[in-house]
Structure formats: structure tokens, C-alpha cells
Length: 386
Ligand SMILES: O=c1[nH]cnc2c1ncn2[C@H]1C[C@H](O)[C@@H](CO)O1
Ligand SMILES: [Zn+2]
Picture 1 (cartoon, rainbow, N blue to C red):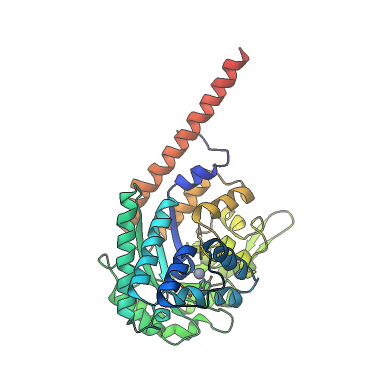
Picture 2: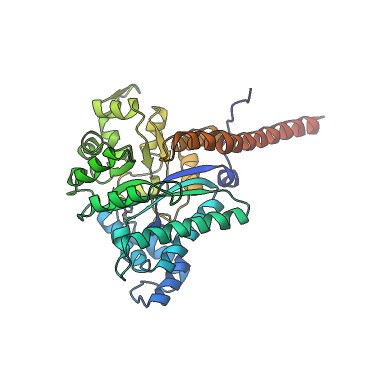
């Protein structure tokens, strides 16, 4: 039997470990250099910086406001340069390449097609350009010795009124050829409850389709309750505020309210995004991030990036922060990764194959390296003592 891995994985091991990403926005993950190139090509002159390094820093700082609406304002610049087929293709291809480079083996990437129509594209053209870009990125990753599969989630903006139309689009493009795997709603949460879009969710349920809902990020339990019990969400985007329904007494004993119990009992996946939560004020520090408690209580928690550009992050970095804050090991990383893979929107047999053929062997290899190093260093110290 494999012995327990006790030490913290090094950043390089974290990068090489197979990772699964369920919550990442396409328009929140552009390379700064690409934004500058695309702005030049389309004549967009409102960028706050024209050097890639400075632009990357600008996004991180502007998004670090402590408020979700202010965080969301920064997307005006990325969406502005994602209005042509070529731009969407490039951004999607680079997204898949960057994730593969970071050790992500499966990703569901979301974006709102309705935000990419300013220069005359149709919703269908947007979806097809992004899908083609993902396929290209998968090919480039393979050529570089990486393996990644990318699915798309189509998002509707919760302040707008196109959710049913976008849900229909997601349904039409669903399937292995195009790679659309589900639906989401995003945008400012306070004042825009998920029930505004009930028609879209009811439609998707009738179509046996999958959806996640951003809930419990900038607003609390009522938003999570609506997302699950009125709308029927398969997963929760963030869901951090579920912590409001959990009481931890001074002696460490824990009491779950009915909603928190439901979420845990039903194994509702929580797409947690620690760095993004610090920026929007949904959590105060990594060490106090609810993911620590939720992991201990065996909620189906997963680790995600949300917006790699605005949060200056990657899957490796998110795990590094959690390793620092909670002392997580490769076993914990594997637990989060298997949770995420179980919660993906692709068919069960394909999820199982990813777990058995990619994730478990990947972690087994890293753990055996770790054991080998431990043995080598122990026998080294024994030899030195003689
Ligand atoms: O964390 C988020 N909460 C709510 N909405 C978000 C978050 N991150 C990005 N968005 C919005 C801004 C994007 O333009 C949109 C589609 O990806 O989704
Ligand atoms: Zn999000």
C-alpha cells in the first residue's frame, strides 16, 4: 500500500500534477500581450496601458476593489477586443494552450456569447469561432507533449434578458462535435436573483441538459437556495456563502443548517475560486477561506481560477496558496481533482476514464517520485552517519 504523503508539494510538482478546471471565464483569461495585439488590430484605443506587463498589473489592481461590480468593470476591455472570429479563435486557442502548459487535463471554459456581437457576429458565429479555437489549442498542446480536453459553457448575463435564447444555443451546440457541455449565468449577483431566468433553467431541464449558476458569491444563502431549489442548478459557481449556514462551536463541533446539509448530502459541487473571492470581498484571506472548512467537512469542493488575468492566477498558483494556507498534500490535490472530474458535465464513462487513465496514474507517479526522494534522503543521511 502507498504510504501517506505528508509533505507539501513543491510548485513544480503542483504544476505537473493533473488538474481539472470547472470555473474559468474565457474573457477573464487573455494574455496581456494578446489584448494589446488585438486592440491594435481592431483600433480599440481605450486600453489603460499599452505595455503587456503593465497591462497585466493594471487588471489585477483594478479587479482588487473588494466589490464584484467593480471587478466586473474590467471586462469591458477584454470583451472590446473579442468581437471578431479571428480574435475569438486566437483567445480560445491560447486559453487551451496556457491551461495545458499549467498541467490542466480537463477544463470547462465559460463566456457569454451575447457580449461578442458588437461588430456584427451572430451568436452562432461566436460559438463556432470559440469551439474552433479550443480544438486548435488542444492540437497545439498535443504537439507540445501536453494533453488537454476543453469543453465550453455558454453563459447568459443575469442583468440582461437573453437567458432562454442562450440556453437554446447551448442546447443546439451540445455534444462531442462542438464541445459545448452546459450553461451558466454570471454578472452582478445582488439585485439579479437566478429566478429571473427560470424559463431558461426549466427549458434546460426539459432538454436533460446541464447548468451551473454563479451563486453565493456577492450575495448569501437566498441566492444559493434559489439556484438549487427553484432553478435546479447542477453545480454552484463559488457557493462560498454556504458557510453562513454552518456553525462551528468553540469546542470545534460543527452544526449544519438544512441548506448546507442538502448541499453536502446531495454532493452539490462547489466551484470555489479563492483568489477571486479575496478580490471581490467574498473572503478575507486564504487561511480563512471557507474552502478549508468545507474540505474538512467533505463537501464536494473544487478549486478553480475564475479569471486568470484579473486575478493574476493559474491552477498551479491557486493550489500553491492552498498548500501554504492549509498544508495540503498531493493527496488533498488529488481529492479536489477527482471531485472536479466527477462533477464535470461530460458523460459519466468519459469522466471515469479521465479519473482512471489520467488523474490517478498522474498522482501515483508524483507520489512514487516523492517516496523515492524520501528514501534517497533517508539512506543518504544513514550513509552520512556511518
Ligand atoms: O466571479 C464572477 N461572478 C460573476 N460574474 C463574473 C465573474 N467572473 C466573470 N464574470 C462575468 C464577467 C464576464 O464578462 C462574464 C462572462 O464570462 O462573466
Ligand atoms: Zn465566475
